[in-house]
Amino acid sequence: MTASFTSWFRESRAIAHLAAPLALVQLAYMAIITTDVVMMGWIGPEALAAGTLASHFYWLFILFAMGLLTGATPVFSQHLGARRFRMIRPTLRHGAWLAVILALPCGVMVWHAETILVALGQDPRVSADGQSYLRYVVWGLLPGLWQVVLSEFLAAHARPRATLVVTLLGIGLNALADYALMFGNFGFPRLGLDGAGIASALVNTFMFLALFAFVLGDRRLRRYRLLGLLWRVEWPRLREIVRIGLPIAITELAEMGMFLATSLLMGLIGTTALAAHAVAAQCCGVAMMIPIGIAQAGAVRVGRAAGAGNPAGAARSGWTALALGGGFALLPAAAFWLSGASLTGLILDRSRPENEAAFGLAVALLAVAAFFQLADALQIVARGVLQGLKDTRVPMLFTLATSWGVGLPAAAFFGIGLDLGGEGIWAGLAAAMIGACVLLIRRFRMQARALAA
Image (cartoon, rainbow, N blue to C red):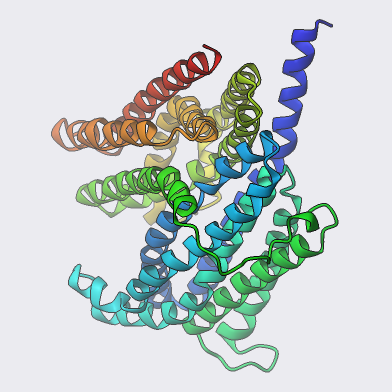
């Protein structure tokens, strides 16, 4: 076994070892959201509509805030790679302060959700119910953002298992709290949708406090004295996180916006197309949790190698992450192509006649999705490894160009203009993913060569 092969094998094992719990954390978060949706459905269709609308409104702001806070990950990683351990506490402190700064405007917008939703043409009664729910959820906003900062801190140290354990505990606590507060079980009052909001706030607070207790109590992390100089704010350090994180946040909103716009295009075709789109999008969302975990692991490994002044190691980490992400993507691609009907059947009951048309279209959309799974996974991982190099502005521009300059116009042209329906709209999504994949991989190759020069 050659030394070169050994180094690549060790890197593959290191990234897989870090990516597995990170991907499971993503799946656990999705499980918490799914639990809320299922139990809202138990209340009734009105509660489900109000809760879903409110959740989508809330997550629009949360994704932006989380994207900004992600700017701390490469900062942590590069400081650790360079063994600048004294810079870890200031980075964590300024990530926490940035969370406070973000929570204030986000909280105000969420608190007044009803006014905004009605102005956007939503049903007043549904908007009012959604606002009541969100006014409880918002109390868990800041703890949730602080948890993001702690999760990045632990991921940069290649220790994400504590985050995974806390999140798994959160799934159980959320289910129990929903069941108790929404339906009046275990002696609690029946609060309906408001109970779901209280449960969400409690679970976010619990997960932050549990993770914070672990970080403070861990023997290897005590050396940072994380509570020291807590009130000191150094604006240059804060600006560094914002400079790296703002393009990430805009990228997240650009992709989310593209998918929301394609949902509107599907709605123009009809409710059947929209239902099929929702099913296929849910399947794709679950499939992407593993590449997201690999992207996060790649960002940490690339960042640590770059911080250590090891350009060859940074390049090896990046290409290894891309290879692992691409290899994994072949599994859902095969499942979508060969077992689309079985996957659709997990969400839509084919035995009901009213579901037959949506069922068939969902299977067709999954077949289209099979063709761009590789590109989608690779562009997600490529963005992650570029983040490890603190390169986020150009990837943001690539995403904006491919999502809004290519994907959405192509979806409208194929789906509406050429009357190809849902398959045409998803062909537009495929064009966006493939374009982003090509541009981002080329960007990483250029950056890796520049590091070695």
